[in-house]
Image (cartoon, rainbow, N blue to C red; front, side, top):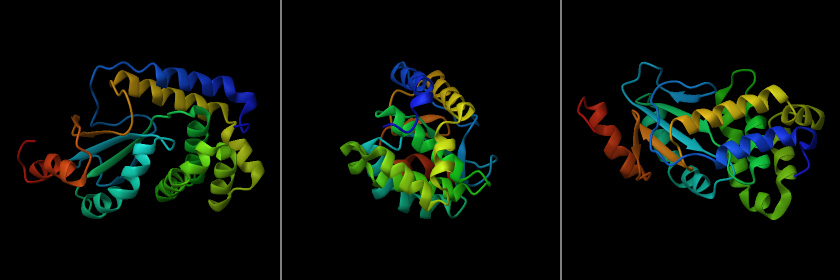
Length: 210
């Protein structure tokens, strides 16, 4: 993709950090810089953290097949605090730029718009993997109200790219090795189906232990 040539070195740093994640388990139920959250507040009894990438096919499959029901059951009802954490996967430059577009779209504090952009990019992965990453991102940015100049400024924002690098390093420190990865109150949940997540969440909501 040719969106971010003059900042590609910075995005490559993000990619190198992402690809060097150590396999050591982990996760976190607290708060990290850049968290995008929905549902209950920080005092929620249950926090579900998802690490994902807009260019991860398994993330896109979960987003389409499980997220709508999960959101309706737990997020829209404020039963859980849902935390989305960005972890770019190949093509790293497209994933990084995609997350930057999502954050620019939500710059006014409209978190729902962030998730709308993430959803749109995930649903366009066939185009992305066919080499149309820039076209997908520009189209998505325009749908979110940006013109091409604003889009170009967004994805070449050095501070934003460096902040992304910081989020990748946080994931590394928490031992996340791939996407999607789910944690319920800090405990890794390997079964990311609605039933699997519910099995970890529901006892906590009932006041028991997972």
